[in-house]
Image (cartoon, rainbow, N blue to C red; front, side):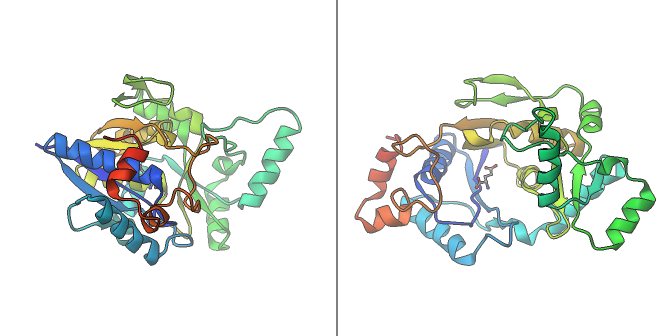
Length: 289
Ligand code: GLU
């Protein structure tokens, strides 16, 4: 079976040099290995994603000379797939609803931090400080009825016991330079949110469901997602999904060493194209021959 690669941008801004590197690397690897290249539009956040950004993604990738298979999978069109995965986790007793707003969570964390540091996930966000797991079924039902803001969280400790030891195969320039079989430590992420009332999925859930449904065998993406792979391996294990190979690549940074932002004019592909650069110049700028 030929390997299957994918580039999976979110249409919440215009693509920059970092996206170009990721897309070109996926495209090169697919071509060199006789594999397939898929494009997936990760548009579950309806407040930030826009159709004009999606069209710009198609235009920029085509300009770069990248060819992808049709049809393109748009996550917002597949919410039933994510609901089915959630139902499976719920049936296993691995989910619980929490009802705090973002502001309440920030207040709870501040309270805890008055007594010392509160644990944070690998991205630096505080772990869930609430007590929702201890609500009785009656209390849960009442809050759900009251239309309170709610999020479905993974009971991480139970999920980790259920899944046992987890690892993934890393072929890239790993976060800590790790390659080979890397131990996954999803516990560090705490009780991650897998769905919200207004969005019946999350990045973590949809990415593993889609990679499996689309038969993706090689996940090539930025190093900023290296640590999140632990959560992805856990969900794959809990949902009985196959394990792809991962290759986390270096990030393209600005001269000051910062990660590129979608709003940055100086590294936006549209701006660089308007300034007269050609696709070969972009390859050179991101260090691809
Ligand atoms: N949609 C994610 C992003 O734009 C990438 C997800 C992935 O490659 O797993 O950062």
